[in-house]
View 1 (cartoon, rainbow, N blue to C red):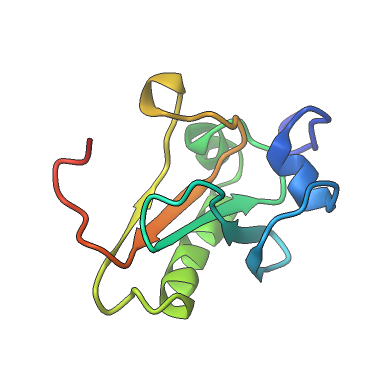
View 2: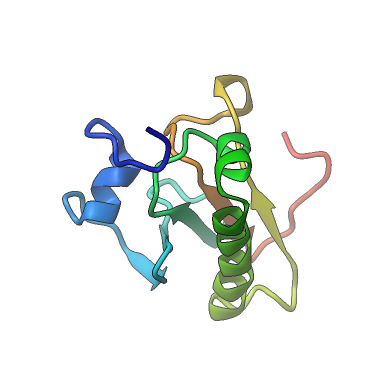
Length: 119
């Protein structure tokens, strides 16, 4: 069922405290932690505590929770001091876009120039 933890989901295990992560922020509905393979000086993942397969599923099932994730992106950027210089929020959806953990999550990237188009 949407929103229920999945036993084989890495991010559900982080939410449950079964897998360690370097948590930088936590709210009643989200957890933000350092990416283990950072692509920028600031690279933080923000996940909803409820399991949803990807950003589209999250937005369809629980728009308020999707908004919580986006709101936290701004807080993370401010906490990481990249809000003034600029930052990027990325949701990879599907394997072709680079999604490797099928639990909705936003990447907050900053602290270096982020060229366009991304690649």
